[in-house]
Length: 306
Length: 65
Ligand SMILES: [Zn+2]
Ligand SMILES: [Zn+2]
Image 1: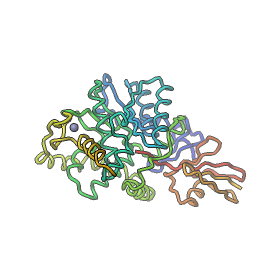
Image 2: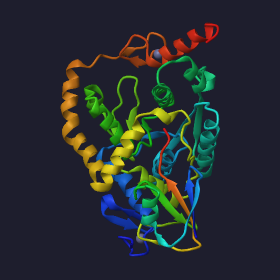
Image 3: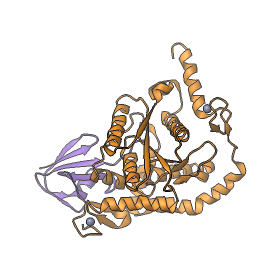
Image 4: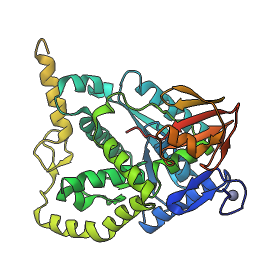
């Protein structure tokens, strides 16, 4: 196969775009996809201070590099989950990467918050992945607001977005379907959230990370074995193999035709947000999810023998 | 022999004769968009030929949360 742009020997074939690129032209293609997403959805203005949520995986580190190269004012935040055999490597990958680029990185340690994930896992019956996700989102948002960032960017890719959208569609979860998308505008107590890599698949980002020599962690989280997303991801990669472009069509057409319908529906029944009575963060309940987790962890520690 | 190393699992296997990167992926039960095929630090598209004596890394594409 030959590169579409310069006719050199191709390194990456992209059936869904019906094309291939050489090692020099491929990163340019990836950057243009991100640039287009930012532009089309007005994700980041030139004077925005951008906080990137980094896990140490290829997606969030690639996003950092791309936003930096596109000239944005980029800072990183890593939430150290304190998971043995995983968190040390993840944190080191983030720290090494940011040091190499000369960009600032902050770290929130859940251990210091009394919420180290192994402790939370041992005390709470709910699936740990959803609790962990909730905690991470809470601290990313809190840090962004308290430190004057106008945008919070995450490395979610097309596969993440499609599998989440599909999971919500399988359940016809209308309230999630009403506000899923690559941009969540700032609201009372919530930073503006953007996903500049939503048009790129995991495969496309993996190729980019390899070609740009991004040193990321490869091993997954030891707790993520029973999450339902991998099932949907496999299903969609099989579908994509047979129907090139199915993923991006499913997602883009939802944004264009589906989401507005659910958004209109949601306007009539959305529970109004009010400040959490414990920490002040916006919530639809009296006490926010993170404070409820905190209480459960604390209550369990007082019970002997658990 | 072609030496193949699977990442991140770390499994190793050998193929007795030359084939393409696509054939190798099929043999491993992988789709063309689910793994990188790497030889000497170079990415190979599915049509590329693998020869006896090659050392190949197949790195499955999976993200962490
Ligand atoms: Zn080229
Ligand atoms: Zn609270």
